[in-house]
Length: 323
Image (cartoon, rainbow, N blue to C red; front, side):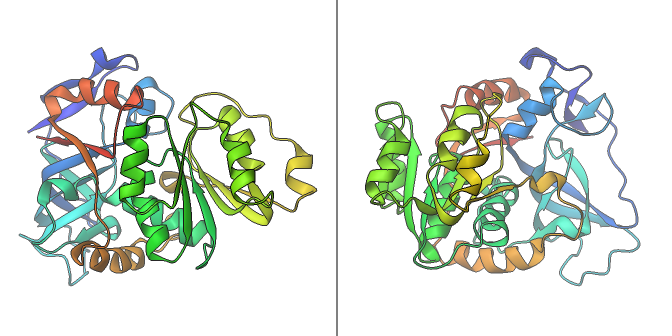
């Protein structure tokens, strides 16, 4: 089989679509013939050596979709069978075949596009856990979603609205803001033209918002904390800027704000109910209430272009690779 491999850390030139050994499933895994695989910012960090993973050389990817071709000897989940179409969350998905722990494999119906399915697990589950498991969002809350046109942002807007929130979304261009509005955002802010902190304070009459989802880090994180209302919450789930943040204790304690960190890939196994989350999400997808926004689909041999596009913050939704 072929796989997207790196033998050293570095620029996109280290990415190679090359022959690799087809994996064999362990007793708790299933083997999947891959239809597609989503690209995440963590893939860029992994390529650069800034994200944990298997020793080099290694295959990239954190999610995929495809068809089960083999079950490990200890896989007893009756929903999983050879020939079943599934989406999966696990390492080394950017390949023609991937072996994944059965606990992170989710069957999906024929009404879901097989290529789109490869970009759903990380994005949909991250959005779900940000809002519900970690963010504790309640109907009627006002939620500020930074990077609203990103893969997670586009899904989080839809989910927050479905669950009864008022949504404020930020983005850098009018095109991206229009996408956010089309997905249900009540208010949009172009952070390149105005100070989003001041805008949020004005919109909320100085109170701030119940929940902020933040993935940029650096000064954006610092300002986002000050957008949180008393007893509100901020969930930080990334540092796309690569910049450090200097959080003031006074900005957190004197207003009784809560700052929560979240990394789905580094959460202890069993700490998050992914199966239950997918059971909630798939009916929303098939019912037309939740959709994946696909920016572009590229062959895995052109993964370098996908990395450059994602790193430039030019994406509107998800980038997906196919073998």
